[in-house]
Image (cartoon, rainbow, N blue to C red; front, side, top):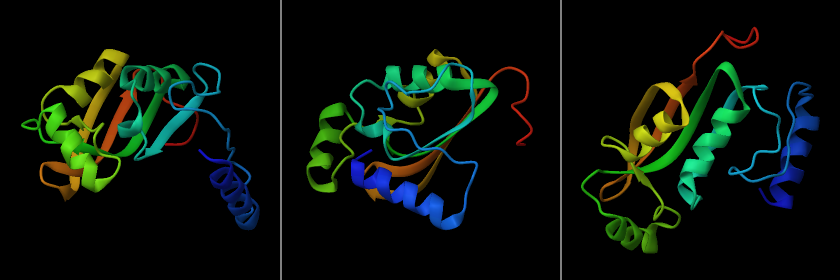
Length: 149
């Protein structure tokens, strides 16, 4: 998150009168929140930018309260694409070189290794040959989160 993005988010919060929203500056590999305190983690096309995806998955799991869930929009790759092929496509489509594969092992196993269950990955549209925008959902097992279902 850049300073400009944070300033815009804060201005939009004020403009809408939202009182249940807080913005913290940090990185997705080191979320500045205590463990087991968050009901939902959302991410809009950021995980594919990280060079340490296991740390991202572990951090999301750490901050979620039992019963918490994730809702992610990210770029994912077909299983047939090698990391080199993904990097080649990244040259002309921007930030997709770090995309994980979604139907085989990388994304699903990465989330499962962090402790997530009920993992769902659904492509929404193609962004390049073998690369897709997708929604990702998963849950941290435990009691239902605080009154927001």
